[in-house]
Length: 197
Length: 157
Image 1: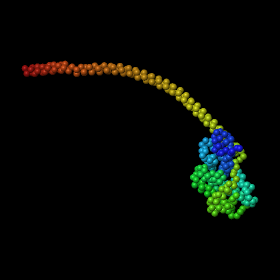
Image 2: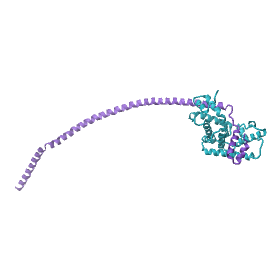
Image 3: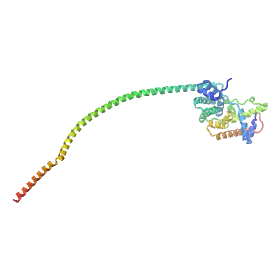
């Protein structure tokens, strides 16, 4: 019976020169990295380039990785720095839902949610609306939301990743929620049930 | 599965703890933006190539460093050898000049020493025999007095 190796074990093997370990680490963090980078730069092709750059940098500095820390937190910090370096040179445009789909986001299929067809359609539409609204809030709010609620990083880990105080992360998360709620309310989602998009 | 509308209602009614919990579910339902099908292979290969290149550059830098140190050491020894020969030649020239000067100075010194010794001997001889000098001086004084007295007598006569 094969046991899935932990991140720390893969790091050890990678440091020992295992190409398979490199491959396994990339495979494990490819989607989280591309997801986070795409949320930040709103361009999937560019996000893949940035994610690749982050992986290359991470492997170059693998010997400096402190194994007391979660690999995810350490890696996302590198990705954050790579992405911020890019954004400093070019501020991202705020894109619409269509723009995000053009950027490579598959959107929310109604079949991925459980329940009655009408409710499913409405739920899928609302999730899509939240997804689209995410692209309209500040990039640092988006990053904090993705790291907290998708990648399950703690507030402290997000603070380390983004190089900001813990209090600032809490404010980002709070304001992100409020802004998303405000955007959705403006679109009428807080009033009556709505079907489709 | 929590209703997304519940989150929105909780958010708008200010129930922060509930809103945060429901929001976590809403975000979890958003499908992630997947990496492209060739992303993993391409990235793993790029990372591996970078590692290989880095190791090669490191090894090359090590070889260059060792060669540089070797050349520097060899050059230093070669240059120092020339310097040592120049120093020895210069030292020999200075030493020979110093020896000639020393011998010349010694000759002059011996000559001056001899003159000084003669003067010293004369002076010390004078001080060693003061009675003879006194006798001569007394005789001269007596002769002088006799001449003066003779002149007085001639005047009076």
